[in-house]
Length: 188
Image (tube, rainbow, N blue to C red; front, top):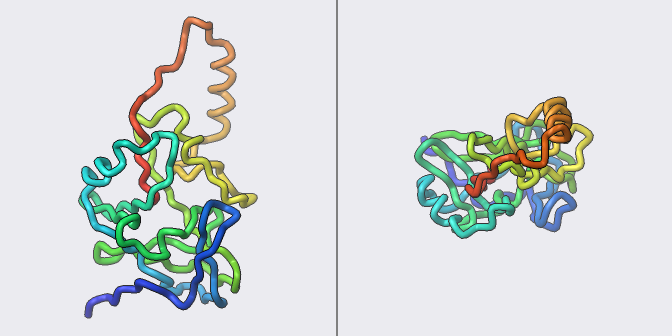
């Protein structure tokens, strides 16, 4: 039996968020394990997603792209629904579930009326990321458990301190190489 499309949801409302731009909030108490909404939009290849964002500011991470698999990306900027406004959170109350090459947002705990929905985007790191990639993908969730970035895996803060110490001892003639490549701005 085919899975029905969940374009809209009585469980949620979109409004301004303290985390970032618009957010998705519980319109009523949502039980744990509820499939709230499907992440919808144009289904494109990774090459098409990159081409659509070639002129995108490399220091701006804001897109509505969701990687489904090695072949498919959902661009919710084209034909998307309210799911595109669910913000990243390091202390998530939802998760994305991929089933039959479709993406659904499900709750991982009870969400009270008025509470903002969020899930961990876990945006993958790449070898050619620019040095400021953690700043580009900085997290704004405000959770006490915040790791400071939407990227995964999170960098070990102890390594950051060691790098700062090494940077201080570096001579002025030495410098870090920088990448002009735009960080892939896949939302999830």
